[in-house]
Length: 199
Image (cartoon, rainbow, N blue to C red):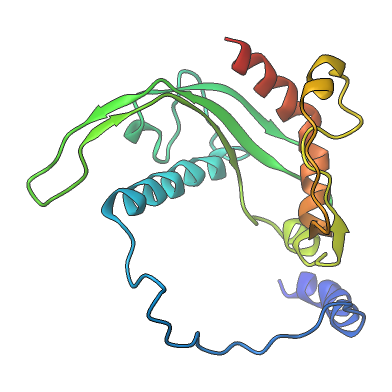
């Protein structure tokens, strides 16, 4: 049962010993009157909704997510969504998993205890599953900063788009593990997003 912990322990010690990052000691933020002490109800509702949408991604690889948008988790809470695709890049180092769904928009009203009211516009949802396995944990430990090239990357074969859209990001970095996971998934995710945006 504990054999996996014994196998991963040397990797963790090596990673700690060879870290190129500076260690930061957690400390409370200074009392700054200009920082908000709360967030708006609508922002909180949006963040809570997005967290439930990401919860659905944990069904991929176990019980599954199926069209139109069905799963054993929270799919029934989103009747306005339709599943476009799911992906899983494998079970080895750098596996990435998630789904793309289309939110056709929904109307919501103020409830009695002061909930939000309004109308949500349509959107394309791209949800990545978080850390789920030991392999994910090892990849996530790859915190060495890597150069980040914003989308679209030079290897995208979309010359018309590239001529009109150039984005530069000086001194931008991303953790090596997350960048590796994105590179594993982007060949599947980006073409689907391009197709959905054309619709």
